[in-house]
Image (spheres, rainbow, N blue to C red):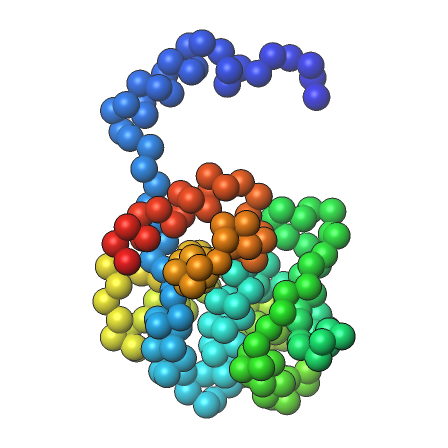
Length: 213
């Protein structure tokens, strides 16, 4: 905005970053994939109380939508729509790659629709899908995106899953993308489903896990 040159492109900065990368490397820690197999094991430990149904909605919603934590927590009952085909979908109104709010419809399975309807009966069917739950019961506030990591790890412990690390909110995206890749889906479709815009980003996420699958 000030019209000044970008100091990050200065030769001294570029050389310093190259030295750092040669010494430290540039490998990034990969999220543990939450694949369909892992999803089913986590769903099996969800109870039938309010917390259990909320957790089941969280698991299926995260896996099927392949959205980021903050985006998952913004879904509302009012975003549920019925497509001309008869299938249900959730209206994603904003996302990291859609800052202008053009919106996108994300089809959901009959299993997830049934869970959402059951959850709606317990919560009034209005407001946020994913809600906080405390000792006093279900809260009307949206679930904190940061708490998704903690809850997934708690479910992982309950299921007795040793996956080489802790599940996180990003595990939904990586796991679902791996499943699509192994099912023969194209990279273009995987990018479209997950809302990625750069091929390099998707390949980086999948390369290490595909090699050991």
